[in-house]
Length: 203
Image 1 (cartoon, one colour):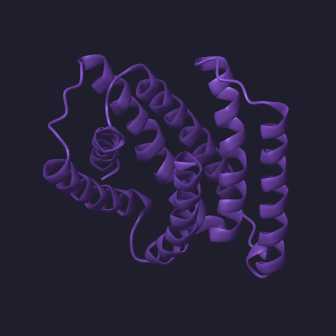
Image 2 (cartoon, helix red, strand yellow):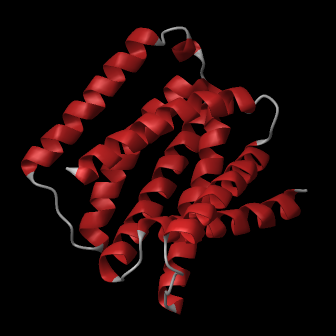
């Protein structure tokens, strides 16, 4: 049950942070917001890793795959999500990104790591998607009047990047001996790397 509770806690944290990110998006560009988010998160994870965990011992393949996962899932995916927040608001961004991401993740997991869901699990996915859609549309009708085609494209790209990053991370965590904290820290480093390059490139 630990995995289920961790997934629910992650969803709750993401929902709360999306509202905060939308507020901060008025003062920061998506790249800058993603950069500072990554720096703060990396600092906290580094502190936890240094104090409570042994030094990370990972092969070059582990570092490479986790860095790639961070580049795609965090560096690009979160930046796309922040762009969507600015364009269409938190309600529609979460509705699109967090509805597409689980489905894309499941499909990519089937193709990449041969991890299949049962029909009961697919039924649960459909039920959650329908419930999220109903709740968001019921309580966010004012926000749903926002319309921006590019915003929907950014939200869809965010979902795709999150799915690819998640599947790569899952493959690494099941294939190699590395804890979740250090794996997350390496992913954040990959995300920060591509963010810094994009900030320099776009000035």
